[in-house]
Length: 407
Ligand SMILES: Cc1ncc(COP(=O)(O)O)c(C=O)c1O
Image 1 (cartoon, rainbow, N blue to C red):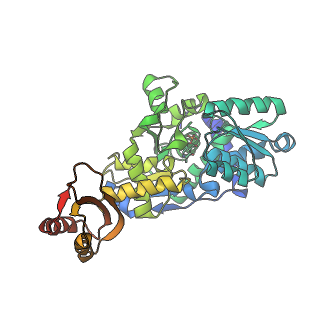
Image 2 (cartoon, protein in one colour):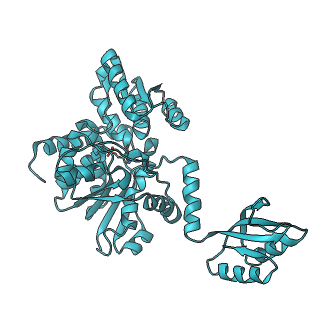
Image 3 (cartoon, protein in one colour):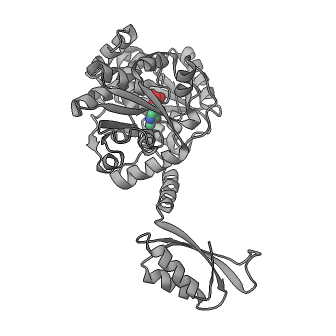
C-alpha cells in the first residue's frame, strides 16, 4: 500500500462505512463460475452486485454519504444528477434515512428509469438533454436550497461506501489474486482498490472501460487527467467525459492495469452471464467478463474476481442481445427459400424443419422483391435448432425439393 495520505483517509473511511452501510445494503454473494474458470484457465469468481438493493452497488456510497451529513440532509434535503444507477441509489438511501431527495435527470432519460427513481419517493426534475445539463442544474438547485449535493463518484465518502465491496471480497475469498472492476467516473474502483491493496498489497487491481468511453485509459496514457468525447455504448452506466480529479489520483495509486473492450464483447459477456451463470448483468456490470472473453488473463491459474457491478438492463435491450447471441452460437438460424406461390409448397419446407425438431421463431413472406420470379414468393424462416449439425442436413433436404435456397 503506498504511504499516501489520501489512501489512508479513504481506508479509514471505508472501515467507518463498513459499520454503517449494512443498515441499508446487503453483503452480496461471491460465487465460483465453472464455465469461465475452464474457458480461461483460472479460478473465476463473480461478485454479484447486480443482486444489491436497487440492482447495483450505488446504494452503498449514497447511503454512507447521506448518513454522514444526516442533520443537514434532513433539514435541507439531498440533490443529485444522474440518469442511471446513482439516481436510484440516492433515492433509495434517502428514503431509508427519512430524507427528501431531488434528482435532476436529462429529459432524454428512459421513462422506466424516471419511474423507478420516483418509486423510492424522490422528486425528479427533468432538465436538458445530456448529463452535463442535469449536473449544472443540480448544482444550481444545491446553491438555491442549501441541500447536500451527492456526487456520483468524486467524493471520499461515496468512494468509501463503494470500498466496502473490497472488504467483502477479502472476507469471502482471502486468496483472491486479481480483481477486475468496471470504471466509470472511478469511484467504484478507487474504493475497492484502496481496500484490497490495504489488506493485500500484492493483489492486482484491473480496471475495464468500453473502448467507446476509455477516459481513464486515455488519461493514464497521457499522464494527466484528460477529457474525451465518448461514443454511445451498451455499457451506458460508465459513459463519462472524464474521471474525477480525486478518483484519478486514487486510481493512479491502486489500479495496476486498464483494459478496454469493444461493444461486441460486452454484448457477448451479457449473453454468457445469462446463459452460463443465470445472471442478469447490464453492460457496465458485464465489462469485467468482456475483458476475459477478449482473451486477457488467460491460463494464469489465478483466483480472479469479476465485479458484476449492476443488473439494471432494460428488457428490450436484453432481448436483442440474447437473440444476437443465439444467432452467433448458430442456435437461431435464418433460412430463405423461394417457393412457388401455391397451395402446399410451404408445407414441404415445414415438414423438413419438423423432421429435424426445429422450432419456428418467425416466418415472413416477401412477394415484392424484384429478384423473385413472378408467381413465386421469398419466404424467410427463422428457426431455433436443437444442435448445429442439423443445418447441413436441412440444407441438403431443402435443395432436393423444388425450391430455390437463398443464402
Ligand atoms: C453498473 C455500474 N457499474 C460501474 C459503474 C462505474 O462506477 P464509477 O462511476 O464509480 O466508476 C457504474 C456507474 O454508474 C454503474 O452504474
